[in-house]
Length: 383
Image (cartoon, rainbow, N blue to C red):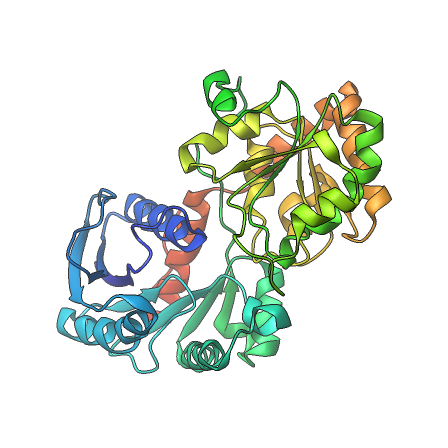
C-alpha cells in the first residue's frame, strides 16, 4: 500500500547542522527501505533551490517564505501546514522541534533534545521562550513524537507531559563513510595538525563542557602533552557569554601553552581525516540528545572517553570510558591510558567497531516506518 509523506525541509540544505544531516539521511534511507513510499520535501522558497540532490521517489515542493527568525516561524506554523493541506499527503513528518499547532494530516515530530527546557543557560529572552512554548504545545498535539535516545524520551515524557505510548526512541547512525583507515595527511596539514593528538570535535557552548576537558588536560599535558596535544576542532564563538565560557582565558589560567591546538571551523568533508588522525576522541558533555561524535569516532576505530550524562552512555555502551564529567583526574587517566597503552587501544577499537555496527540508517528508517504505520493504523512491514 502506497504512502505519501510530507516532510518539513527547512534544514535540507544545512548539512552543517544535526537536523540537516538527520533529514537528508532519513529521507534517503526511507525510500530505499520502502519501495511504495513517496516523500515530498517542502522547503522555504527564498529565491534558490537547495543544493543537495534529491533521493529517488522524493520531490521538491517550494513554499513561499520570508527570511529570518520570524520567517521561520511563519513557515512552520502557516506556510508549511497550508502547503501540506493542498498536497493531501497521508502523513506529515517534521524532523526537528518545530511542528505546527494545527495540522491537516496526522503528524509525527522528531524532538532531538529539550535543551532550552533542561538547561537554564539556553532559555534566551522573551521571544526565545515564546518559541519554546509554541513548539512544546505543538509537540503535545502531534500524533507521535520520535526522539534520538532513551534519555531524550525521558525528557519528553516528563517535561512535555506526553504519554510514553506516543513517544518512540529511535537512535541515529553514523554515515557509512566513517570507517577505519589512514588519515589524509593533506587534510591534517591544512588544519595544522600533528601526527598524533587527542581530539575534541564540536561546539564550545557550556553544555559541551570544554572547560571540564581543559581542567582534565591540565593533568594530561605534563605527562604526554608534547606527544599528544589536545585538538579543539570546531568554530570558536566570537564572544564570551553566559552560554559560551571564556575558553581562551581558561587555557591561559591553566598554563596549557602549546599543549592545545585550535582548528577553527571544520568542513564536513574533512571530519573523516580528522577522526582517523586522532589517538583518542573525547566528548564529556553534560547534555547530548545523541552522542553522534562518539559514534562517528567508534565507527572510525577510535577509543572514546565520554561523560555519563544524558544519551552518551547508551550510545557508547561498554565500548569506551564513561565517566563523571566533573571527574577531571579520572578523565585525564582515561585519556592517557588510551593514548599510550597499545593493548587497551586495540581492545577499545574492536569494542567500538562492534558497538558502532549496532547503529545504521537502515535500522533508523525501518523503525521510523513502523511509527508511520502505527500512526496511520496500517499493518507492520514484513521481514
